Length: 196
Image (cartoon, rainbow, N blue to C red; front, top):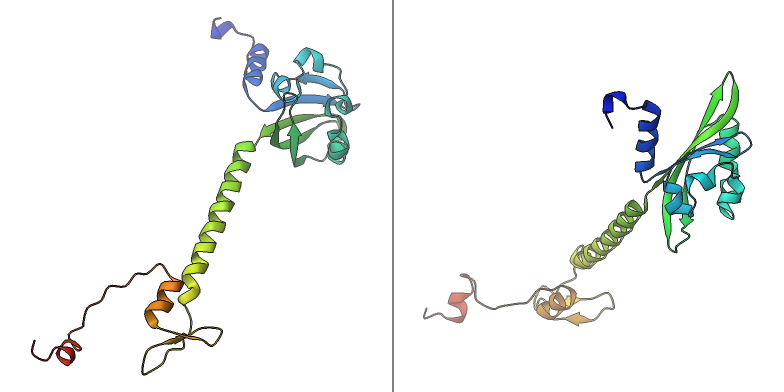
């Protein structure tokens, strides 16, 4: 097809049928006047099957949930909402739906529908929430040695929250992932090894 001689309406229809979001037009009686191919994947309905179908017949149990938004669009108020949509072949998609009123001369003639799949976004959000929870738990473990630590001035034993005393190394090892190695600092070396 020569792009110069192509019918703009046919190009627009081809373009709308290529996108994965559901795009449709519903009249004031909630009858479908147009839908794209995406309805086939989401609801198992071709554009020909959608033509003239009522929104209630298409949505089934979702209709009651969507009705306040449908009514809002038919009052001339743009609507946007999220919905979990079960698929005919099993599984489900998370979506963001936009209902845009078609107002002409102050009269609402119908509304356009655009429903986009946000399932990958919701999955990433869940992964991020899990990662944040894991990070917070790890930080909470690290914070166990923050704050005041009651320590004996003479022997350096540490008193825990129960009032029990523990050796410094045992306490720190039990509350962190720290391992100890031993040596003597320059101040202590002459005390223990005066001949060095």
